[in-house]
Image (cartoon, rainbow, N blue to C red):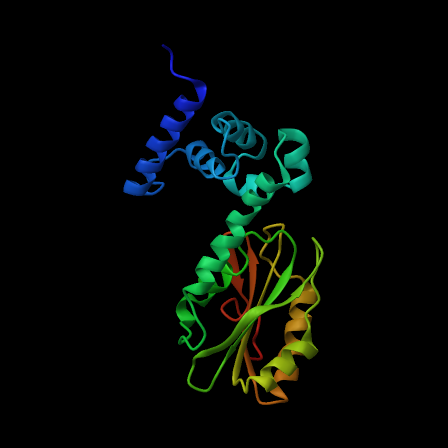
Length: 230
């Protein structure tokens, strides 16, 4: 008697789970990792074909996760729940990285750009992140202070000053992302950095650096010599 389709899927999923438990995603093809993740969003359907179709359209797992929910529903007949589950991948990844650096951690200046970069995982619109440090060099605040459109986020200078005063900060760092992936600063980026530096300096807080994040890359204005007034 031939095995039922459900039992074949169940056996395949169980083998995939055991393989993952033993080695994580090491050795998995990209479509296999996506297929397995979709197991938990679509429990009663073969997700192999769907994983292939998604990657054919969006090329990478990052592209799949950044796809609009309504497009995933319309073009791939995914439920809102399944599409939302995919959107959770980068968001949960960002929360994971953030949790590795709890408040009161001493700030590692040599790796700060990489640290800042994790704050923008999965973001498709501009955002501004503020990091405040106390007199001992420990992090006392690290969070998003503004979100913008796909193209621009306003630097919330007043809010940053209020937070710096409230947390009794001595040092500040800011970062914002360019969703286009271009990490070169615009003239307005440089101008607002100077205004923020001068404003914070007036209350005894030193703005040390402004990072521009573009995908997997980043630019430090200080290291690039673009904050000569520092």
